[in-house]
Image (cartoon, rainbow, N blue to C red):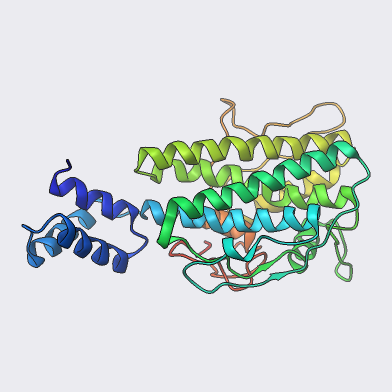
Length: 306
């Protein structure tokens, strides 16, 4: 059905790392490529690697899975008072605990309903990516959804050095906390799109990006309607200071003009590289492999900010 080179290419794109590639190539040779000797397999593997020097599709999806774990845990605790089921947090790498998190006492029924829908969507994203990745999926890393929000709020100037920010204290704090990383998810999927080779994966990622954009717009609209524009704009400025010199972030507007859709002059959403995304969630403008919302770093081969 597929030529030898096509099969090797498929394996190259789906493997998480070099060990995976060797194992999958060996398995393919035993299962259906018996005419290919070990030396030929090695040569084809090297040739395929020379053809493509970017991250594999599985590495990209695993990077996204780390971000979905973070969002899903935050919303799950805020809505239901508990985190994700244990059975959907296992996988490769160190499986870590969740620090913080508790149920929010929502006073606005509409905001509770918005948050519930987002929580359900984020858990479904986790389940979908885990199913898609199969045995290559990474475990949920250690996630901090308590101290990290205080650090982010201090960086944004929302609170002073000796103060703390509790994202679960009320619905206003919850919305500001959600805003810290909602836009980041949109720019992450946008930035990853050109790197995904498998068209089925690309379509799925585009679908998740669209849903994340709906979520981000809902949070931005809610903040604007509640008059939390100044605080939200400070968070936007803080994100922009973390991800490098490029202007990849926009606030939600002012008293006269709303800015629900952050986009460039062509009304196209911004992109962030994986390193820039990690700058934001690690809460550092420097090259690091851990920090902020991920105290021990993310799992998978894409793990360094920059």
